[in-house]
Length: 83
Image (cartoon, rainbow, N blue to C red):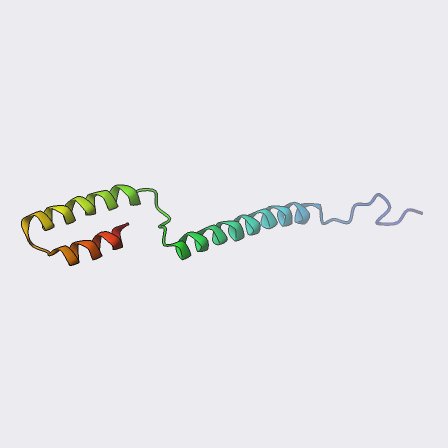
């Protein structure tokens, strides 16, 4: 007599599939978290539009320096912060 488990089916096949999906999602979240942490630690933002905003901010900073709103020391400090 083969019994209930005679054909190797234990009734948890669908749960194993869900487990695999959850495992892939977990590791994807871990990898994304590590990449985000490394970018945050290096000071690089996660968004792609940063370079566009930084160049606009640098242009505004140059205009303020040209108008005389800020002095050379303040210009250099803010330029360093932007780059």
